[in-house]
Structures are given as structure tokens and as C-alpha cells.
Image (cartoon, rainbow, N blue to C red):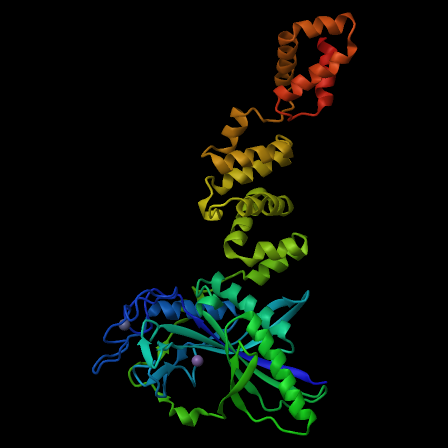
Amino acid sequence: MYELVMWLETHVRVKSKTKMFCSCKNAVELAGEPNENTCPVCMWFPGMLPVLNEEIVNLAVRAGLAMKCTVNKISNFDRKSYFYPDLPAGYQITQLYHPIVEHGEVKTFVNGELKTFHIHRMHIENDAGKLVHAGSKTLCDYNRAWSPLMEIVTEPDFRSKEDVIAYLEELQKIMRFCWASDADMEKWQLRCDVNISLRKPGETEFRNRVEIKNLNSFASISRAIDTEYKRQAKIYDAGGKIDQETRWWNDEKWVSSPLRSKEDAMDYRYFPEPDLPPLVLTDEYIEARKIDELPIDRRLKYLNEYKLQEDDARILSNEKNISDYFEQIVKLTSDPKKSCSYITTVLLAHFKESDDNVSFDSLKFDIEQLASVINLVNKNELSSTNAKVVIEELFMNWWKTNEIIERLWLKQTNDMWALEEIVKKVIENNSTQVEQYKAWNEKLFWFFVWQAMKESKWAWNPKIFNDLFKKYL
Ligand code: ZN
Ligand code: MN
């Protein structure tokens, strides 16, 4: 038995409008025609100079703060040289010595237990282009070249694949919450390298690590960790040693193969980037980008303060639009439990059932209308059955809650006058039955109650009509 020790290096594509150092479109959704988003700057023609895009700094600072990191007021860019055809400059601009952000944490639930994973650092750097292998030729597509990345490096806090997956899922939520990235793995907006080492339980030192690259889904991450654990355990069991190396994961064959052995900073001839000045941020700039409530903070609030069920707390904190909607409804109703139940059992169920892409943004009513339904139910002015009728109308029409209640006469009122009107009307319209009832057929009493219930759209307790008919007949 060995203990797994892992840390992660995750690259997240920043969702800025333009690229890192030029004004070309940053196609975070996969771009159309090859090389349509290129210019002399991002093709690194002689004489061109990079100009840092402020939006990337903005988003990186927000993401860093969302991971509870320290934002460095001064950070620097460094040049990492290597030759590869997807890199027009022959180097990458990154931040080796002084990253923009460091020392933070990401909290999340792993199998019901709240865990904290520490962030070592995060820096910004540029992405490379894409190589397309076509038969015997290789084609270069530079649409992605010099688009921005955030590289997030964790501490060696991970002990199981469940830890890794839970952290990455939380990281996705954080990135979406602070608008820094959609972090969609299928679109390569988030990619993760896993560093894996094993040791005997009780050992305090770390043994050599192996870095596994090319993991682009949760499923392949989980397969790669299992496979690497077995591979290293087998070598240790046979008395062998693990070399520090980088391996390439083949997700079709479920095996990894050596990519390169130990590389260090020397190989890349790192040196301070001469074309860019240090990045200097003021306290005010950093302060203005703080995010007060993270998805995990909200989830804990829903559990501990609002006393919601675990599943509900998870559903209502997972996605920003659902969570924001819930937060707003709670503000308007001061009733988290009922707000939760109307969102999960009525709204989300409706979205699921409808064919077209209905979501919070495309609702025909504004949030105040739903809040007022909940408030009327709480004031006993609307029955919960009729509340559903009102919401169905809200989905279909552009009416407001009070209009629907009025038009469909759904108000549950303690004003006996309206009810008496119904009773009188039923008696008037059914004179034959009234005569029969009075003469011999007492069973007809229930016919009148039924008629009144129908007339009132089933909004009242039959007992009320029962009493009234006794009085009027
Ligand atoms: Zn460009
Ligand atoms: Mn990197």
C-alpha cells in the first residue's frame, strides 16, 4: 500500500475579448477559418512589439482574489525560449520569478467532507497555436497563438483522484463566477497536468514525481491517476526507483509513455522579458476587484444558515445564474426554504421539460413577479395550488402576477363577500336543483358545494362553502 501525493498545474484560457499583446480576437470558442485571427504582432514579424491587454490583468486579479490569493503589486514577465512551429516568436512570455498572484486556497466538498487545497501560485502567459496533421504534411493555425492563459499551480495537497476531480470542478465554478473563463474542458479552455508521486504511509519526504500531460477530461484524469499509481507501485515493489519525468497519456490505449526526462529552468534560457515593463498594480486596483461570495461560501450559507437540504444547497450554488436568481428571490421574500422549493421544483423542472432553450435569461416575467407569488402564499392570500397556476401563466404570458390573479380570479380572500356572491350565483343558476333539494333530495347539497368550488377555481376549502350553503339554502 502506498499513499498517493499529487499536485496540479492547470492552464485556463482567459475569456478576454482580444489576445494578450495585440488587438486580434481571442477566440475562446473554437475559431472558424484557420489563421483568421492573426496580425503582424501575434505573428511576431520583425519590429513588432507586444502591448499588454489590461482586460487580462483585470480578469487574472479577479480570479486570484476568488482563490483567496495574495495579488502582487509588482510582477514581471520572463521569456521562455524553445523552438516549436506553433510558436511564431520562438519563445513564450510567462512569469517565472514574480507571478501576478500567489498563496491562496480552494475549498470544496469531497465525498461530503469539506477540504482545503492550497494554491502555490498563478501566473499569466501566452498560449501557442495549433498544429493540424494532414497526411504527410503539418499545417499551422495561429488563431490561438498569443491568446492569454492563467497557469494555476497547487501545493501537493491531493491524496486521491476524487480530490483532484472535486478541486477541478470547484475551480471551474470559481472561474465562471468571476467571469475569467468558461473553463470548459471539451473546448480546451481548461487543461490539467497532474504530478504524481507515491510514498509509504508515515513517510514525510516526497519521492520523485512523474508529470502526466494531455489530460483533457475528468474521465481521462481519473484513468491516468489509477494507471500511474499501479505503474509506480509495481516498480517500487520490485525494489526499483522512479525517475522524475514527464509522461504523455494515451487515452485510447489507457497507457502513458515517456515524453522527456528532467528538464529545468536552464534548458529554457529564462530571462526577464525586455519588451515589457514590470506590471505594477495599486491597492485601489486590487481592492476594486474583490469578490465577496464564492460558490462554496454560498453553498455553506445555504446549508448552515438557510438549513436547506444538501442536494438543494449544491444545485443552488453550482451555477452562477441559478445562484444569483436564488439570492435575489431570497432578498425579496426573506424565505429561503420556499424560494428554494419554487426554483428547484417549479422553475428548473419547467426548464427541463420545455424543448426550446428556456433559462433564467429568457423568462417572460421579472423576478419580482415570482417573489410576489411566494409572498402571497405566505400571507395566505394564494393557495399553493393556485400559485402553480399563476406561475404557469407567467411562463406563457407577459402578464404580471396580480393581473393573473385578478383575471383568473384566484385570490384566496378572507373577505366573505366574494364567497357569498358565488354561493348566491350557484343558487340562482340552479333553481330546479334547489327545489328538488328543498322537497326531498338532500344529497344535492354536495352538488351545490361542487358547483361553488368549480366557480371559485378550486381555491377554497369546501368547508367554507359548506357553511355558506347551509346558511343560504
Ligand atoms: Zn494579433
Ligand atoms: Mn504554462
